[in-house]
Image 1: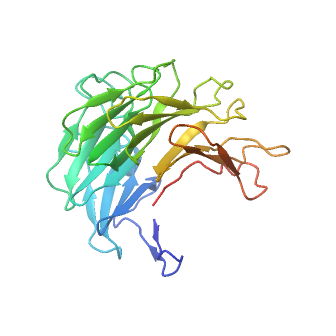
Image 2 (image 1 turned 180 degrees about the horizontal axis):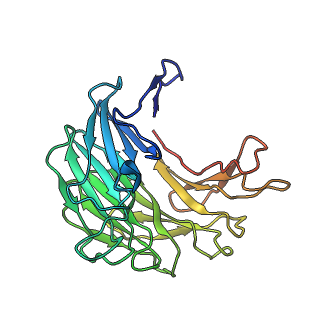
Length: 290
């Protein structure tokens, strides 16, 4: 993982003190409140996973692993941070005898005080913890295949993991991947469903909700096409919602990608194409607002 000043200068490179082959250190990152969190979802080469916490200058490494981690849990696929806690998603964690149900883990900045959050209705292959977002004193968790090969779901919690609220799409269909990306801000929740088929097979969609899960607005691209993966990433800030479509194709190009901006009510679409003629560039595969 690399740290820079906001003008791109003063690079600091982070590597784990116990680095080994194929650990995917850097598969997720978060920064804030004087700390950096880096996920390594394939740590131990079998995918138990780990996360590392650092000071902003890259010192003070703290390694975190799940107390109940299992092979293939992908602990560290998603990470988030608040003023006193870090949050780690493990979407393939086994819960009891329920495989790939997923879990989210909460720790103090020093790696202590583990709290494990499971969906109250956890099921096989739900992938709870695929994505995480923090905002408005809430924790938002995506479960992209809830239940088995299902449409997916998103869960809202207090920052301590209590007071669960589950959100599902009003037009949910199998394999939509609702919850594969989540964002929270501007008093709204945004959930991506990149495999939704409304525009065409795998064209994708995004949904906007109030913080209490009401007021659903569904967004699809005006130029939706098969396999665009609209909703692979989402962000919200100010009065806008942003949606990535990393396989969007432009004339003469393949999988160049694009980003779409909307008002909070889903109107006013603006399309931002890949600024480079870069086939397979997958522009929009990830985004952040700050």
